[in-house]
Image (cartoon, rainbow, N blue to C red; front, side, top):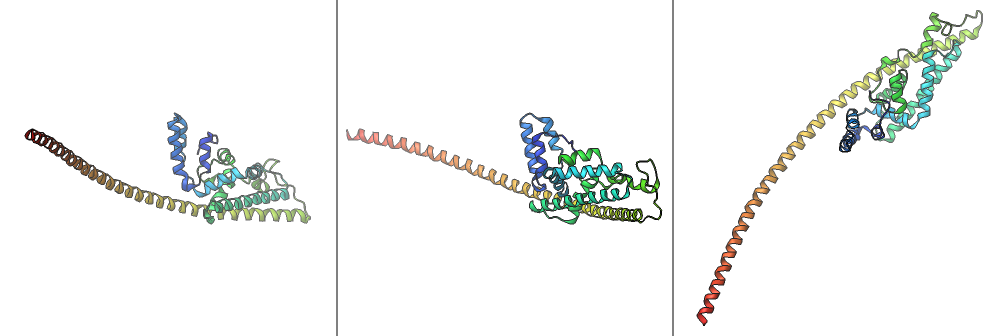
Amino acid sequence: MASAAAPAAIDGLYEVPPAGFVQARNALVKSLKAGGQREQAEQAAKLPRPTASVWASNQVARRAADLVAQLADATARLQGGVTRDREKYAAAINHHRDLLNEVRARVESILADAGLRAAPATVAAAVQNFRTGLMEANTRALLLHGRLTEDVGLEAGAGLFGLASGLGDGGDEKHAAPPPAAKSHKPHAAGAGDAKARERERREEERARRERERAQAKARADAEREVHARRKAADAASAAREKQEFAVASARRELAAAERALAELRSTEQAATAALAAAQSALKTLHR
């Protein structure tokens, strides 16, 4: 993945929609090389064309920085273990989910405004970028700066609910389950609510995984179609170029022939003019 730090010229590429990215990147690389900034040109040349989900993720990070920062904090709290109080833990899960839903709405809005189809798989992949990408230092930095270059894999999310295991299995005091309160219905209700929250989270993770796989399959198919289309366009351009080169060569031959004919006509004209002058001179001599 690219660095979270980037020169201003390169940073602007992350805002270019996928359809115009390659053209904008190539133009920037050419401009940087012309300006003697070869290191930056090489950095820009390495940036891949973003998927719709990656582009939308970057735009959410750039346009809703406060929302993403809140989600990053909520993610960090869940990773570290927010409390040994089950009710507070369930509340933290719900808060995290609410923030992800806000991100989802932002993604859908951004895609629609850009004229891109907000396909379920695309939206799910973008949400997954935030869900798992904010758990690791390198991808978190890229997301917070809106400079993600590829979708984040599901494997990054293995350590989100650090408290969940502690609540059932014991461990250090920070993550340990609270002492059981016999004959008290409140802890029981809290535990049930927490279990439901974890089950909902598990189902969401499984759904996100399936949507992610569909998104990746679609991305591969789209990439293959794009390669085929670009190859076909390149072949057509090559054929058109050869046709134009042949036409230019033919025109040059015709021009050369016309220039030779013109030179011959000028030579004939000069000879005729000289002959006329001689005849006129001879005529004057006879009149004398």
